[in-house]
Length: 363
Image (cartoon, rainbow, N blue to C red; front, side, top):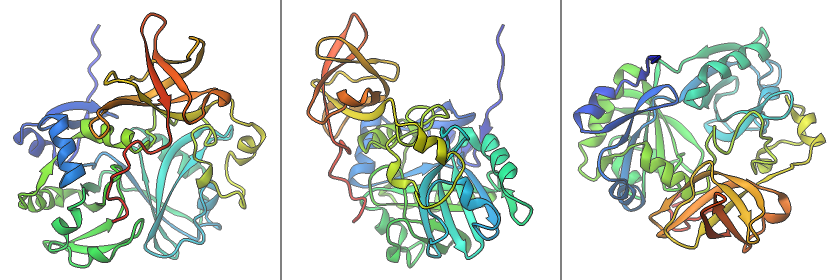
């Protein structure tokens, strides 16, 4: 029996189809996988500038004092000391210390916050926030009111500075309000590609106008989720459902530097009481053969020591690259490993993150 499941459309779905994008289901959304070849779109992003539709991401608006309303205890990163117009990456955990979702907190005012979460987790996350914020907080799920466009690449500043004068003043992980075609937008200097880039949050109904305006610049090319995955693996960025899950602790996922150890937050006691039984690692194939999620990881004697969570072919390295969890003793930079299955194994070497080191992220 076939079960039909309806997908959400972003406000730009018709634009993607008109531009010839191959559309796929992702996190419950109908999204563009690619417009041209993945290799061509990789070139756009690493050497020029790309435009992504990320309107599937979730946005929660919260008003209240971070500590008094309960927000500070929901997220594991420090937020009470955040300067205005800054943002911080982190996560929220369940009582057992597993990652419910990774997220970015934006401080819009002393008592005014925006939380950006993953598309597939919007409903689950909204329930979690509503359950743990107290009555002094105002909470709004603005995910279907807020569109998100990502302009990424070494030429992204040049592409945007005439449309939104002043964006060139933004430093990494800061944001401000700007006007594009008279439309008020929150623009942050953030991204998921490892390149200089900006994320534009605008009204849902204005997304198409802004999308077309940005694409009027011939140097900007639309790009899809396919190359976005390659880019994020090259940078060793985690993806929920792969490197992050409710059964994975932030220590196992390598997110320990984002934990505020000075405060009490949901799941913190479980995290501190349970040392990681596995740790995230990164490895480079000895050939163009690429690992895939679900592959096993072996030591050079053929003993299973872990599993692959993400893998791809790196256009930057011209080799296969992978992310996975391994037993702690086996996860050492320079160590030889194998990936694949019991019948077919490929040699690889454990490496430092990121794989791609030529990005313009901090330019």
